Length: 380
Image 1 (spheres, helix red, strand yellow):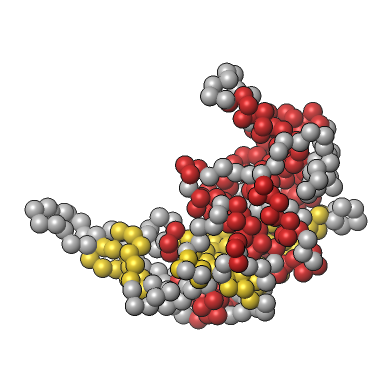
Image 2 (cartoon, rainbow, N blue to C red):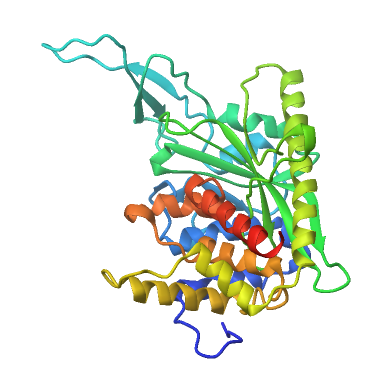
């Protein structure tokens, strides 16, 4: 990696592993960018995909996961096939009563959430302990609405993390945004991420995730109020439905929400790429978002200097130099640091994968804060 800036900070060695993401044929990027995004970020955190020997609960379109983990497929597949390739099928998620120990009493009943192990069908796993109102969900129920969406997209990735406690899948949608088409031609592709847990920790949800092609930044943002209709939704709950008609209707609603969201995203992004920014304005945004420490406590000043130097290097680096000097460039520099250089919270590598995949609420909130500051200080 060659940075077009004098004296940049030392970049992590893991950044060098990302090169194959960006040497791919960008004309075919829709078939491999998003899984490359997930895969390389999985690599940065030494992967936390569920594994058994040389098998992994992960499948991806064209690109293998870190250390060649998971199953690669080269043609579009059905939802049922996607589940099979990712070792997500036939888990038979179910509840088993938790026995109250002798000498204890409880006014509530509790259950273990269990499954049939996807690699060894002769064994069973405990995924969590839940209360009386919990209803187990099969992976097939999370993914089956995709059958009705495959005419408007294709499966890109699927897998499980945290030893099966969380599962996810991503669909590449047939929509591309091109900003400044007669100039820098900055491209953003659209993905729909679905995820849930089998331990009650997160709800069943879907998230619309725009991804900037050249740097693979995930730009999952909450967009503001637009008239009487209120704010457009970036994430939404998925309802359970047993009927074919219900599944088709749900898929249409999901696609409709995705396109409505992207309509507003396109307007925002176009306005940002048309707004010029000075170096002084960039510095003000960065220092507003990350204020300089008042005291040098526990090396805080050195950490702050390193963060500022890194953001300056990213802003004029290989993947932002065509848009630096614009509000869009500022926002993407901030996003790139969060996506590619974030430290795992509390040593939890799973949080890095969740952030990279676009369904970590903490990182998403920080991205929204960054975009809000850019719009307030530069575009107001």
